[in-house]
Length: 593
Image 1 (spheres, helix red, strand yellow):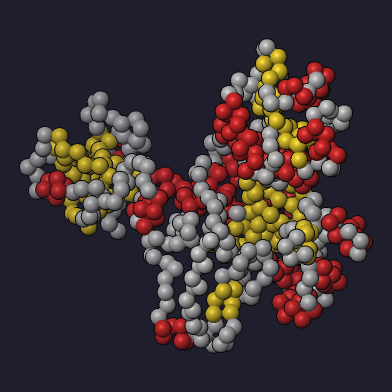
Image 2: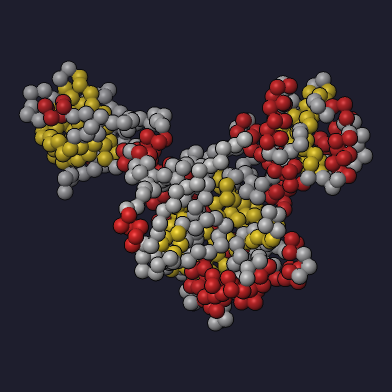
């Protein structure tokens, strides 16, 4: 071993001992010939001191940031007044007796000993350097603790970890598959799994009963701050369970895990709030609501049933709604600020935005002359709005009103700092629609995925009104993010076949793509259900990071490129020939008129 101790473990109890350390030069300072170096490894930082005139001094004086050193010396107490209370090792220092340069470093593309604002593309190109920074090291350790806690918790409750194949077949999971060409089977392709959905269901048929896996998944979709082309989830499945059995298992896991791995965070409630899909969207404008603050959406359609305001009248006559939020302390918004909010509302799809400011001098705003004192009183009673608040109305279809006010709610969350960052506001959203109408293709699509069990009481609606069928699906949401999605699964061939047919799949396609699972359901498949929390997104929230790239060791950028390895890259002609693939040029785009 290159070291007898780590840089972070030495304390006053070690004074007088001779130790050998190895690590990186975090900082180097020269004080009148006496050289001080903060030596760093994964476990911490310790100060080493080299006095002039000693044989090893030259190598220490030459050392620069991120050089790798091995030093041997004696632990001694720092002089009075020179202690560093900000360091666990701040009481002591190492009087160096020998130093060896294990490897020098080129000048750095960015500083590692400070968390300065560096272009993300530069950070990703030199990710192995970026990961040396304390913040990223802490994120990796947090991720390790999260995964270890999950494994230990589930192991104690009878779950077993089973690996499923990375090379499988294409399945309808809602995104594009990454395809892998087969050399042996010319013209055929594997698909990287978007999730182990079918495989974990087959494990239930196989009698595993309680399965989990820290699963790598792949989806070829456009990226956002909380998405990557490859990601990691806790994949979990249970046999002989109803919905609340799965929810209770997950709620217990996360309620125990948060204080253990992130004690700076606190849960907002226990047991967790449970909302139906329609309650969540109607009340918060989103099926993944941030519950750390109020600012709920209210329906004022009844208040304005006899309104003289033509915009409100026409909306109600056309089957629309009038909904609003009451924003605290914003009654004095200027005309420009209101115009900017109106522009924002239109960007969400709304026709416009009406405002009513509750000021000490009375009501003001674009809707002032159309709203009576009685209607103002009714609005206050519904929402609890008071003097100083700004009421924002959207008169439109229910979907547009909910979406627009939900977006405004989040805008004011950030603008007014309404959400406490130390809070983890978990909730369950349940009873999702089973299907959604695809207007472009004139067909029904699965709102969740096609293996989700519909509510059994809704089965007769398959023949009458698929839009009213509810699924036994559920989402775990937290702070405005979907952290997990799951459902009770179909375990009967007749129901699974009926859903495939409703989705417009031909019998030949059903047999080709799903014949294996349909056949498995004929061999005594037990009722089962599961869920898959996203580990990257969870760690992002626990670490207060702005995106999941900060909690992944080697992420892709927003263009799905690995800048460090320059991937994806082209294949050689020999490789393409072996795979029976020919690359065709991308068609030139037609110039716009």
